Amino acid sequence: MSEVRNKNLMALSHAVELGAKVIRKVAGEEIATTLKGDIVTDQQIKSALSAKIQNKILSAKGGQK
Image (cartoon, rainbow, N blue to C red; front, top):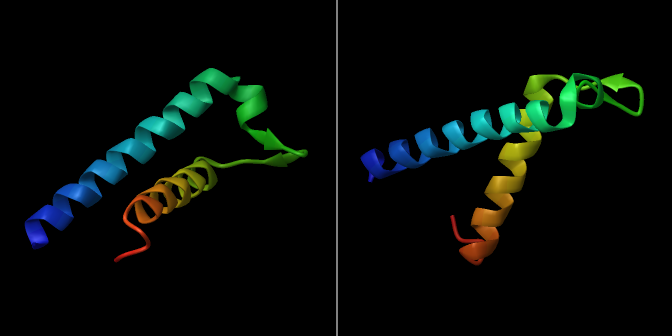
């Protein structure tokens, strides 16, 4: 069980890293670094992506943990 969990965490980590890079690349530096005038950090983008992915996973599993 621990091995499966570790692989899933690794996959989630890679997905978040890739997603953050894609957002920066597609949106461009000017758009990607500000939101309503506030600077958006890579960590904030990664946190938002993690939350969205986790929400989708939990929704697909009926909220089971």
